[in-house]
Length: 484
Image (tube, rainbow, N blue to C red; front, top):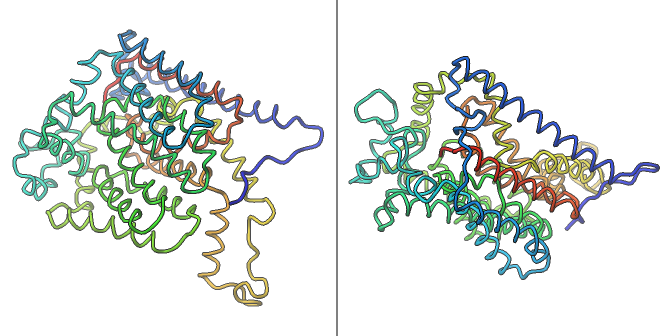
């Protein structure tokens, strides 16, 4: 494995001070973006523009409040910021993952309980627009799958509710299956969302360690535990989506064909949880490129898993591509027709900041710097066309060039490739116009991979950035009443 890149020294320049100043400058830009999104959102709402978000850029309402989850959230944060950070550096790996998951569950539940047990958990998934509204009507799963696409469009007697119509049938199936095994109702569904969504705290570090970045895995884990996006993980269907995607990518990273097949099955099912998860392909590609062996068996096994799940849905009567076409029509039958693209295309990024936390900008900046150093460091880019390397005077063939390019990208390492892939996915979703508002929860499956960039932050500064994450989550949860 290549050692982690460091910034080159420059004579007469205090590089650490310069880098810290750059992080603070990015933080200032984030503050300006957020302030602009809030002020413009207030103005547009007062003018009656159809933002359909009272606390734009978040889909929430202004409601300052406290709850009995408040002291619990503060307690969890203090423990993680204090002894937790020190312990994470030296703890046994298995114990660290278990403790990290339990801490994430405690953090997510405590934030939900700021709104109270009923409003924060039990009734969170029961409104008419939510999946649980449809569960009692699904008495025949094969029949539901066969006729699912026909019920996507609105303004017909048997139209699906908003969330069910906006996703492939896998999302509804999850809650139907929970009901079938005796975990029906709002409380059980909400707790399942929390328990599954927080497994990303395990899956992301496992992925990094499997790809040879064990130190980064330990550095990133506290940022995943105290994720501001936990406000929406507890509880929404997107929490389950986040856990499934993260588990699929971890399985793709860990080793042999069997794990890759299981990862493909998970990612294939994820594709039938949300149409937007076609963008997870960028993350899957980053994992495969970063794998140290880069044998085709993992790619073939993963592809077979995705294909198998897709085939099962097709045999049951649901075709992903047909459903997506109907969803685009349904999307513009609702609020999306009113919500102005000119506001949301940049205000979405402000909402993303509140979900990922203020560390996002500095973390991505550090990732870019690390990529630049790794790319230009000696030996990072193999020379093409040299004698004996693939073609002599004629130069290397297409396969040799592709292989060389893959080696160049792999040299960047998973702590660069994975945040870069997540950034590409988020920007594509944003520019598509199919993500106007509510991205603070919709993009959670990508947020957990964006935060890998925090591994590039200097060790002494991480505690302060993590404290900023905590303050962001507490501010959002106590000033606003968020909607799943």
